[in-house]
Image (cartoon, rainbow over all chains, first blue to last red; front, top):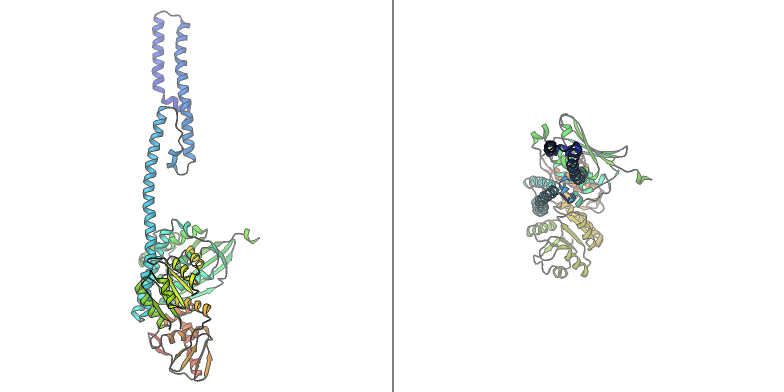
Length: 332
Length: 220
């Protein structure tokens, strides 16, 4: 709050005061008071008023300046009510009370939604664990009654399991801090695990797999890595790959894992957007994609400090690249 | 082979696991009385316990601890929660292995085999069908005194077929089995493996043993 703003705000009062003073001076002049006396009276009135205005300005200035500074610095701005210092003047007190009450009601509101979303997430997680029991028993049933029908049933059950897994990771993806253990992982392990998990679908699609140079150590959460690789493999299978090649090489500052497939590829205009939530693109629309798989991959990568990107030539290949940074500090 | 005791509250899973284990030559018992489950274990003296975590009355961890107080029987814990915490807890309570649901039944069997091998130095039994004997431990197949060594893949294929004698096993299933033991073979490699296996069988005088069912798979 600057002096000029304050004065502009007080302009009507000052105009009236000035007018009244001039009028008074006029009357005194009519009563033939001498000029010095008139000037003295006018000066008393104006100085008194100016002193009053000054005191008023000084009390407000500190409060508003503080308030604006706090607002600037605060990152969740709605917490401003907590930072307010009770001022000594009346309007300030009203403002303070109103902001505090608004803030409190806002917090209650937020807490309500936060609780609801936490509860929902907990429910989804509990549900996922529940549903795994019937999935396990359906799998056993399929295995104990071998035959072509049961075999394709088993494949469908695998798909259900994949979707259930995706739901679990999706619900967890907003609070991953809960279970995540970054440790030294040899890339060979998660790649093989992901391949085994999706073996049925990949074999069913007649896909040949080639692994080489995977004996690189990286730092990541293995469980998440298996999930992400699974999403990438499932995409390759979905978009008509006949060959998948997984290999790693060292690149400046870390290790780069390539998952290459010779499926239909990604159109150039879609390429920058495939990691966006809900983006399906030209291929996705034909295949009923959910637009979640790669989005979750990116999100999980971000949380672990990894980088994920894609290269593709339509009709020839697509390649997902995962970059695992390796700190140089530990190599000393 | 081994006597396995199931502690699992889903009756269907119990029945299906029982069928599965019997097919692979183990015997299997379970009880639906979860109040006296530890006594049930002590009475029956199994060679291995497969323990679910989510149970009525007492949870699996408690039962695991109680069993450990009285017996050294190998325990495999099965759970649908796969956090590192659960795994750590299982191991600390004295479980021998930890499998997450929904398990791949083949992997479950392999884990059971591994735990039995550790605990009892137990080797897989020879498989026999129409006079052909497979020793999965050594990877050797023999017939009437003549024997021939098999590669890892050939051994796995023959083992799978002989465990399911009289049933047609599809190429996809065979490949899946090989993939599960880190051999990511493709269709052509499988054809080569099968042909080599047939040649080896012929070299010890076994013909018309491994039959092709066109479009469906293989059978012994």
